[in-house]
Image 1: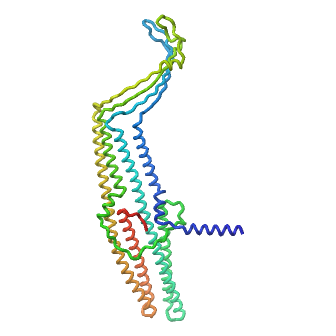
Image 2 (image 1 turned 135 degrees about the horizontal axis):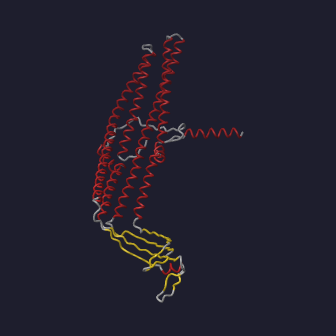
Length: 448
C-alpha cells in the first residue's frame, strides 16, 4: 500500500510540474535576472560604484605611520682624529596630509564618477530591454506555432473523416478504389503536416528556453494566450513615439550621461593648470644606541653621560611638526594642454555617440511603424482570403458529396483553406509583435 501511495503521489507531482506554464512576464523577469550578460554589466556597475566611493573618500586626509631601524659600523672623524662609531638607531613617525586647494578637483572628480555610475545603470537597462524584446518575439512565435498545430489538427480530423467516408462508399461500390487511396494519402499528408507543426512548437520552445538560459528545457512550456480576432489599427503617430523614446530609452540616457562625464573629465584635467595646496601634520620620536660604549657622550664638565633607556629616549625625543606645501605648475612640456584637448575630443565622441543612438532609435521606431501598418494590411487581406477559401472549400465539399467534382479538387480546396488559416495567424502575430514593439518605444511595458 505504501508503494502504491508513493507512486500515486509521484505521478501527481509530476503532473503538477508538467502543467506549470510560463507567462510572458515570468519569462522576461527570469531572463533579466539570470542572463549572464546582465550579470556581467552589473559587475561593471559595481566597479563604478566603488570608483565613486573612492572619489568621495579623497576628501579625507591620508594618514600613514612608519618605523625604521638602522645599524652602522665603522670609524667617524673627530677633528684630526677618528673614533669608533658603531651604533643602532630606531625612529617612529605618524603623519597626515590633506588636499586643501586644487580648483575643485575632488568635487569635479566625484561629479564625473557619478555620471559614469548613471551610464552603467542605463547600460544594464538597455540589455534588459533587448532581452525582453527577444523573449517577446520568441514567445509570440511559440504561440503562433501552437495555433498552427490547432489548424493542422483540424485539417487532420477532416481528412480522417473524408477517408472514413471514402472507405464506406468504396466498399458499397459507389466510388472507385482510387478515391479511398487518394483520401488515405490526403490523410497521411495532413498527419505529416501535424507532426511538422508539433515539432515547430518544440523547436520554438527550445529556442525560448535557450534565451532564458534554462538548464532543463524538456518540460518547459508557455501559457496559451488568446489573441483577439478583431485587431484594430494603431493611431499613435511616429513623432509621439519618438518624443517618448528619446526621453525614456536607456541607451539615449546612457549616451547623455557619458557626455556629462566627458565634460566633467575635461574640467578635472584643467585643474592641473592650477596650484595645489596641501597641509600636513605629524609626530615622531627616535632612539639611538652607541654599540661600542654604554655612554652617550660627555657633559660640559667632561663627565660621561650614561645612555638613556629605549623608552626614556622615546619620551625625551618626542616631537611634532606641521606645514603647508604649495605646488605651482610652471612648465610640463605642454602635456596638460594636450590632455585637455584629448578630453574635448572625447566630448565630441560622446556627443556623436548620442546622435548615433538617437538615429538607431528613430530608425527602429520608423521600422516598427512601417511594420505595424504593413502587417495590419496583410492581416486584413489574409482575413478576406480566408473567408473566400472557406467558401470555396464548402462549395467543393458539397459538390463532391453530390458527385459533381473529384476528391482531388476537394483536397486542393481544403489545402487552400488550411494555408489561408495559417496566413491569418501569421499576419495576426506579426501585427501583434510589431504593435507591441511600437508601444514599447512609446513607454508601454510588454504584456499580452
